[in-house]
Length: 530
Image 1 (cartoon, rainbow, N blue to C red):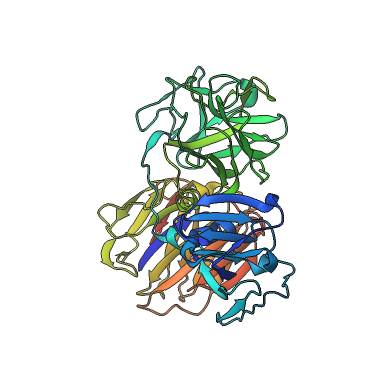
Image 2: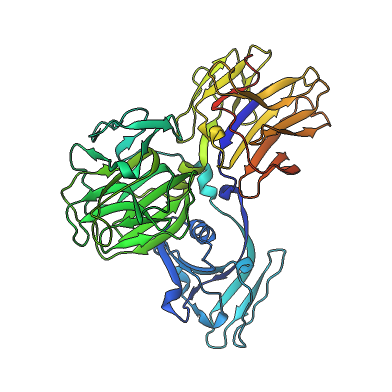
């Protein structure tokens, strides 16, 4: 069989979402209250501005100024009397999301209409001869994310915590005054902290983060959210003085970035025993702090000053904070893949870092390279290069040919959602066969599970195993056509407790499965190694 694989963990695919919106060209939005302004951004395109509003559930209306690529997000419903005409050279637009508006207010001075066929009509204002166009259209949010690559450009430090505290960049390895314990992480292993042990890591020298832009991102798994006011991921503190103490923490179940008096706190409540991806960004050019959770913007705020601390060691797993907190706070849980960069990472890059676990293109079988952010390793056993659905693919012709992928730890997590998808081109299905085999051991033994495969009569089967070890199969009894590319996707939604199967983009089955069982982090494609 020929196939490609993409494995991701998050069930919302913003890069292919279609969004209905209404657009008013050559206008700007002046709401009745300044408090309606949520955020302002410098963006590369109008489409990026749309996506920023779309991913912020509080955003209803936006203004985009093409002349300086400024994006303003508002929580206010669009009312026509608050639209102000602008000159053509400013290249501005006001865009609203009608599905987020409970009522629409129109005034007698302006008239407009929209149609489902995306045609446009002209609205004229009684106070100006300038005309504007109102159009119902579709935006493909995050389209630029499709070709985005995750880069470690300007990386200052990176800690994989694969049974050590070394900086893989080579600049700022960590000192531990205790013997760290490690657990299975998001990738490889993760470092484990216990608050009551009063322990954290410290860099050997100061990491300069003052008066500049930076991004700090990592995976975390918190095990206690109620025993302490603050849980500290880390930071560096010169003194408990305004803008001289950088700290990243959880307070009252919310993410928080602190410059000491210039602080931003998130809006999404965390839960214990679940992996999260956190990104903290500071943009020095516009004095803005941004918090991303699982790749989506959770909160941003403008601050008065840059971080100004020029001394102090960088800590992970706790550290010095002071102020309205204890002088030193600690952390309970796991931290993995901790990175520091001297740049503002783009929303697309942050999104891919959080949702893309691994992506194998199979454009070369001599070196199976994961095109995702985690650089997962894979080994080809007797698979042959062939023409694929996109560029090249890999062909499996016997039970002795397969690809082994190591470290898909998301499948060993009980609570995180995931999506597995691939293109296949069946050459023969009547003799049965395995598409995806998972195991707790590298040789395919141990606790193992046939996730996808074909029965002897050619039926396609996607299995799901719950926490009680009960298997629920999704069976497609109509055989797939031979020598034809078919796209398959299986989605586990931990919120709804459902497992869904899509064939060529069409939902063919949606079953209630409640909780899932861990099925091992070793994945075999094309055959079972047993």
